[in-house]
Image (cartoon, rainbow over all chains, first blue to last red; front, side, top):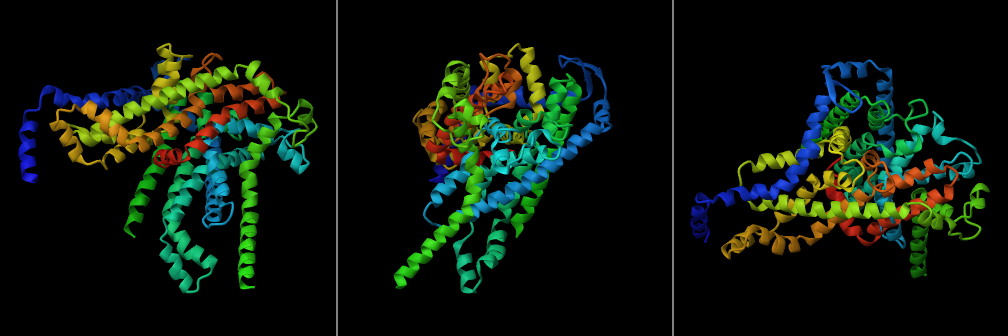
Length: 300
Length: 278
């Protein structure tokens, strides 16, 4: 059977017509053209622009080498922006992990109403970051907002250096809670039930099972989810743009917002491009860490 | 006695679970209920710090739909999201077909190049894309919103994984019967991969509907503005019209939530595939 098939197909391959040779590329063309124009080209162009002084239309004017980078690195506001971004990323990653774990553990058993709880916890995946930011604008309203009514205070949450960043991080945790819930729940379902059964036979209680069966079984999922949260946190933009515009006093000037401000308020496309390259390198490093850790964890 | 005890135990367990769930449910659901509640309030209620409307008042929705261009934003977003969704279905199925059924020179290299695009965050190329679009004079147009998103590595990857589960013999047999590759794709592969296409479609439509940064950069006039931009700009128009803003949020969130409610399975499958990307 297999030999006859080989005989049948071999001559066809040798006498491939021109069309047969070209056809696969025709199938790929639409996707590759879009990738070329809107991914590969702008990627190269961003690196190119980052090495030039640009005019206010974003045209490269004078070759500047690493000038844009040295001016960014010498600018204290860049380091503030980076520090703020790192603080934000840590808050979002920790918050996302805690909320994701709690919601998935609470819906892992069966009881009346568990479907309602699961659906509620998954729901933020559908809500746009811009729409949620507008809702939070109302919740955080200094005089008539829900939070101040409940606390009996009159705090301008987004205008206060102490609160602005935690508030944006809280909103981001809320926005990512749905995807965290979905993934961690899937991870929980992937732990073989026999492990729990044998742990019960050995007389392990809830917390022992949690630390000796659930957490180790879930650790690849949790690790992956933390990485996803970190990458998403680095890319946050709408929350900042809508609620704080980077303020007060740069306290929420996350890296993507800094890129936006550089390009569209200051028309400094060269430095905006250099900041974009820095963002790319940071995310690349995180992705590479993820790959190497995943490869290692396959071994055990 | 024993049966009652077991019943009581079960009831206690349920109550316990609900008590633990309650704080989390409040955190997740309260923002939505509060938004809806504010949108239904007469203006006086908001400023007297009520949490529940004293009467259901539809004035905010009337204002949003008839005195503001929100219906236009909704139409724009429908056009853009539908076009992006259909476009991705076409380009991704074609590319995935080539990567899974056809043999050709450079196949692995091209596939790696496609996957590599997932490592580049969209925010890092957005400045250069904006400059390209401006140079072409595409600012303020539907094609500026649609064309850059007409394909995705995640879609190609998702469909290719699906196509690889099909028997190769199917393709061989069709070829022997003189069926062209294009016809094979349209009349056999696509109907068989409907669940995967549904996942891609639901995920892409929702993502496009919820998009914020790119439409913010390339649209200037209300004529082409999409829902998320339009709604977030209500604040700049009148910071006092809190009820109107919340009505706007409710209107633009209903389609997102409908996809979640009616296509939950497809959406979650798409999300699970999409989260490989950052």
